[in-house]
Image 1 (tube, one colour):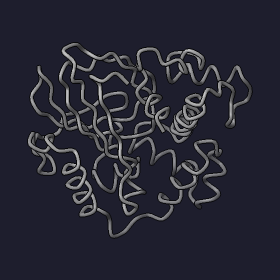
Image 2 (tube, helix red, strand yellow):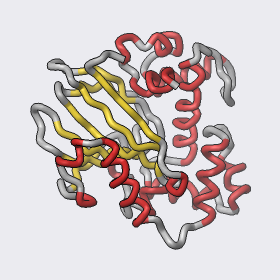
Image 3 (tube, rainbow, N blue to C red):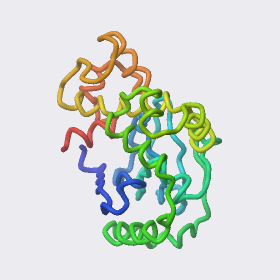
Image 4 (spheres, rainbow, N blue to C red):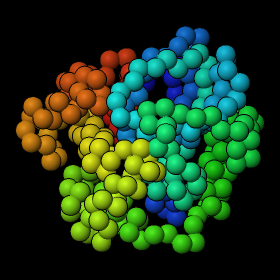
Length: 251
């Protein structure tokens, strides 16, 4: 990645595994905007950020279902907690159904964070981790926990009927939960996770389906749907536009 655009993502404490995927940051140190493509990844992002043109603010991003090109303003510094969907109900205590492919601003003192917390990422990581641990639920619906466990283990390739049977929760009830909490169906969410899992293969230069796609044409169609480009162009990642792919290539 260019020296004037820095990013870092750290896995959470194992105690938070059901709710948090990672805690990270990015910093555009340049005097010019950074053009990037945001791709659907199945995560709910809580951003704490500021830039040369915008004061400190906190934003909760809903799930994305299509790629979007955005400009990261000069001198933007952002710390982010990337949640798994289960956190929407149990940690954030809200619904993001109305914020599919969009976001909402939260109070500037949400969880007692402020601009000073952007000075030290390690301190931010510890503070965020501690706060989430304090919010961990005493009672967690085991069906929901196991549902997401199966979804992630299968990388989105397990059929809805199979998931329903394994967790003892009807497909209708599962889809109602997904639509009410997240604003999309289980099937669409699984497609997004399968796409994200495919990015790991594309980052390694594997431009053919490794997961449960019907054929090569289906694979290309799904990759283009969620990234905006075909696998070959995505793999080239010109100008590091696709940050998610850049992160995977670094592993």
